[in-house]
Image (cartoon, rainbow, N blue to C red):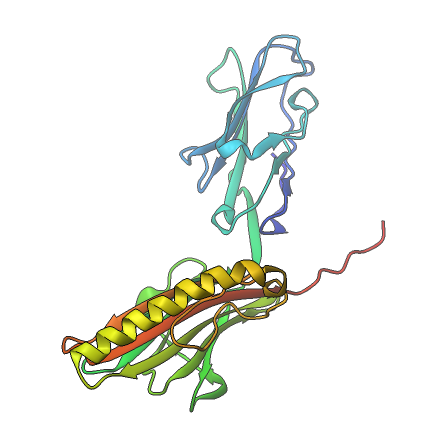
Length: 297
């Protein structure tokens, strides 16, 4: 079995895993089966399998994991090359090709070293969260994925730009990394930036604290904010075209969110047990991928 040591491709695109083989038969037109495994040879899970009937050059697909695996080669011509569509980071790993000829249990051949598929991806922030702590303190967690693993940094009020974040090793796994901002000490916008050689992604939280003199005034504040949201929802229909040109998904106002093109947002409100303090949190996501350079054919 002849396979390359490694194949590299980008997440979202396609990859071809070459595999050719030789066998002792001068001419074989009997039934055969072509198989691709992932993880380890002989015992790894199958991701693709096809079978060719006697005298046929058509290898009929019997298994294609998630419908993304397709045979490019012709087993009758000693070629088992495989194409994988819509690559994901989870596809990163080692793959093994195998051919089985009917009749003899020993007439089967499989690559022992396999081909290493390396999947690269621009950063993507998969989660950002703000958690309440003792008193009125809050801390934030940001999780991103990518290959190479992205570097994470927090910036915000009193932090400056590009402030280094505290890595949380217990949360890191696979292609994901997590960084913690131990304290959100001031109101305003806090941004988590993930970057690697292929691009960058950002997610921001807008933190606002409101204080009321009593439970009644706090309730009035909430009702006022809800009323403002209702009016804004009606107004959005009138300014929809303008909204598509906004760069941010969160307006640093009294607790409301306007969605913008390409940016997703959500709003959370916390209230302390005494009902005299409120915190509004708006979260938005955006990403930037470096343009790829194409070589002329």
